[in-house]
Image 1 (cartoon, rainbow, N blue to C red):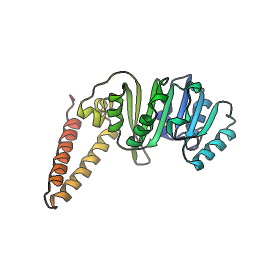
Image 2: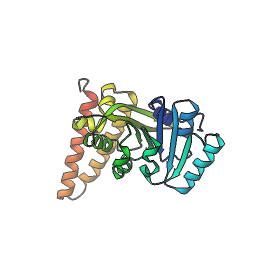
Image 3: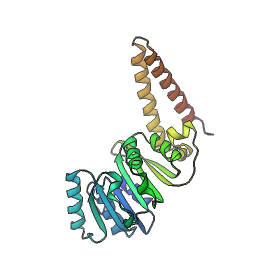
Image 4: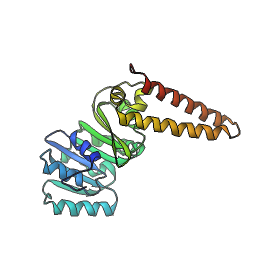
Length: 235
């Protein structure tokens, strides 16, 4: 992967960036995504934010190598503190982190989202918490994609301003993904059910406590919910 040819995962993220956007890529690593967006005339300007010094320095080198110093600003900062109102950022991308970490980044600096109209988020795990956060903070899911790359399954969530109400099933599985029921989607959730069943089998051997009983009930509920969802064509 480089600034000219992204991974399938980041290419999917890039595909949802509106033409003419001013983008902030938080946790930018080598700044491949911002460089790609500028090279392909998708974004007009970009901020590459990094909280760790090593990746920050890699991003600075990459932007210089690509000759994009006038279009991309690299900043060493924690989360959304990489952006300022004067940047006029309207699109934020956060990719390659867990869902809870992505939510904490957004939650820690809600005031910096004032001028932002689109969030493109790619959680490695626990996309559910992003959907919950969106519902509670005035964001609606415009689209969702699930994909497999190098034997790993990823979800990409595209959020825009708006109200949204999701069922428990839709929060866990994703309304758009549930409607499509792609092969990758089914594969992911069959794998999850198998994991839950393994945990269930192991705790069946444990001494029954209130905590164990609650965990067993939770797992049985999740298994029934997901099995019903992936088998029911009318969900």
